Length: 324
Image (cartoon, rainbow, N blue to C red; front, side):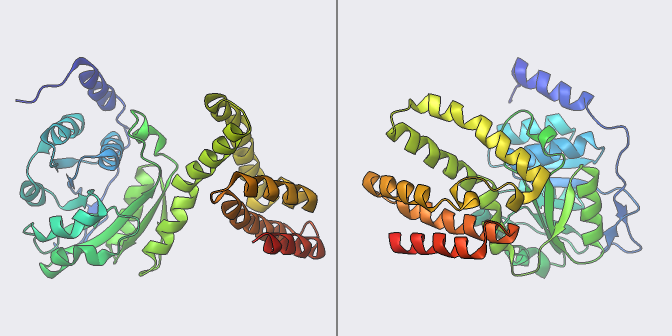
């Protein structure tokens, strides 16, 4: 039998103590096929990775009942079940026990997992993929279940405070009525903001999310690489970037993206851009190519802000074009 270590038991105890005292009310409409907003529903989780741990834990603190959890790794299912008062079952057991089933496995496994379960009419089956459309759940739809997508715009780092930090994030929802309203209600009860994405546009939406998360890390990695090439110790370079990052984000929150723009584009300083490009060309690889692509985005931000003038921005664009 799987047993929990001291740290895991303490974390589970903390999760239970932090439950909210104002539970959400997810409700059931007049028929079995319209779970909406009046009688409590039970939720099941197929997959117990980072996303499921944060969502299920936060739902538990908000008073949302999780009935069952399944995972290919029994220890993960057992941990999450213990933390949320649910049962650790197999995938079919989760589907049999819950009104709403969240499939929180990697995108490539969603359709396969869905096809391997016997669903029932009126059940709601939800995937948490950012890029995947609802057709990943077609096997459930063909069995009479309703389908939806529920994707948190959040970087799940696998940290103990992921569930706490999830508050304030947005969640992209796609569902038919009445489930769209019920899932939006759930998002709000989790302290999150519901977003609507047009059907067929999930991949575009998710590509955008990558710029605000993983690609941001890639930009910071590039900065550290350039500083290291300039002779700065790598660890010192990473430490040095945080005041810049924090200041940039604070300015963006206060003044908007275009209003927070700084650097040579914001000043119309073409000579500095030329120096940057020569240094990056000398470094080789694709450093100059990445710089020019991002500089074009900076030109778009400057044009949105209305400064520098259109003539100055046109001159900067020509410098970038000549560099390629």
